[in-house]
Length: 156
Image (cartoon, rainbow, N blue to C red):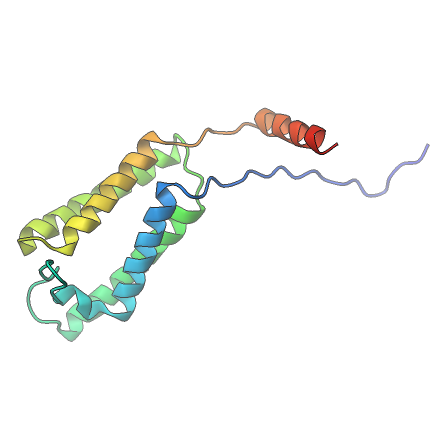
């Protein structure tokens, strides 16, 4: 009888369900984050039918504050892309997106007219609803083992 000196460990992998609304929201946050970081003066400009998101002068202090705000936007982009949202953490993410939607909505009303804050609020509401009500199943070790057995049986 031979006894192996090194025992191979089996790793269970779970594929991410990419291509859903949280990935689209991730792309939006990355885009808005990089825009905010590299072109914060865009918030003070009219674009097509949209009025400026921020009224007033693009002072150095305002531009610095906007560049800092790029950090949380980029963080949200990373988080929305890599987290496998389930029935527990999805509710927390949804609550954060709902808070962000409220802040964007308040800014939209304060700025008046049709402006980019309405788009931000809409994306945040859609993301909150997606995270809260379209959760991935919480996989147990038994479920993962069953998936691994099916995968091995299919490859044999």
